[in-house]
Amino acid sequence: MAERSDGDWLGDLQTLKAELEASYPNLLWKASFESDVDLPASAAAAERAVREARTDQQAFQAIATLVDGIGDGHLYIADAEHVVEQLPSETRDLFEDAASACASIGYSDVDGDAYSLPFETAGRFELIRGTPASGFRTGIVTTAAGQKVAVLRIASFLSAEFVSACEAAFATVSMSASHSDWPRWCSANCVARLREQSIALGIAWLRRDLEVAWRRGARTLLIDLGQNPGGESWAWDLAQSIAGRRLESPALGVVADGRLDRYLSVRADELQVAARDTRNDRATRQAALVALNALLKIRIDVTSRRPCDLSWVWKERREWSVAALWQCGRVARVPLAVDGELLLDGTALVPAGKTSRRLPIDVEEIGWRGSLVIFVDRDSVSAAELFAGYLQDANAAVVIGERTRGGGCGFIGYRRSPIVLPMSGLQVVAPDCIMLRTDGRNSAAGVRPDIPIYSSYPENLALFATRIVKAAALQP
Image (cartoon, rainbow, N blue to C red):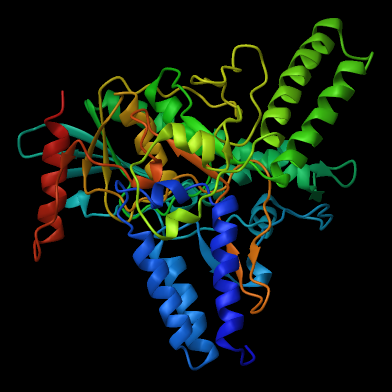
């Protein structure tokens, strides 16, 4: 970075604050008494540090400290070349086998299936399935009291860890380069379908593993989400599958800016084409027309909002208010599913209420019949927290362990550009959505366990794992 004056950096600091006021969905939560962040104190400290900075690096660190101090893992300063991930528009490399194809697309065997705690030492342990390529680790612990607890490890919610499932699904979604089965190639659309099929297949295999656990006498399922960094929206699909019943989608808000309007505009054009296409039957055209009218009303609501002045967040803290969020939080209550798909079929459009959605992936229902317990710790974040929250809010699972860090909803639906600070060129990535729990709290508050269990330093981890298993076995 070239040397700049403190005025330049102060200008960048003011730009950052203004941009966060305009497009950071968690701002009102972070400025509330209910959050763990003292935003006014952090902002004042950042401004003092910028004014006192004598080098470019010191000023940069002052702004970085403010970003870090907000305490949102989805808000960060990023390298320009790593801001946006993109699928290949057309990958025509020929693949001679599924293994090389999946590896090229990004599926990789990582040593991520190990339990976050040594649950194997909590009693007699039987492994059902556990390889890095499977995405899950499933086994049964038989306690000293003779209780059998199935322990499922979910190391992350990244679909790229379903290596075996990708290899099994590749031939069904890819395209043959000749009349023979191989070599084959995969376009961007194929990559998207491959991801969905890999997730569905991985969950189907998990269903079989849990059936094995049930037949062997396990009546409690302990899901290990310790140190799970989150990942993708299929956490919702897995939650519905394990719950064995339809869960209500959480209240979801999306940043109401020009990017959202462009996204809705594209979807409106697609619906208009479907409504006019005579190749579609009458029922399909009518459904598209109804959805189009609903979408146009949403666009009017999004574009006609008058923004509130949120500059007070840097000076004072206020009580958290869901009403204030929808009125002044710069977010729109758009009927999006948690994977970013619009819900525009008549039953889903309930503007002030909750929505339910069909699974976008053909996922087998697991429907665990016994007790369901979820272990979380301070390093369970993002999609891992959302997964635990979905089931906790539905009273479908008991959550044990530590309070999670609080990542909340990250990125959904459409791609947003980063916030660019004009003088320094720093790029700040900000989340584009907010998700509320059933009690109105922001999911960024983290998950509070129903049964808090903490490791007492310097407790042996094996003993801590045994305490977790015993607590799970006691749940009705």
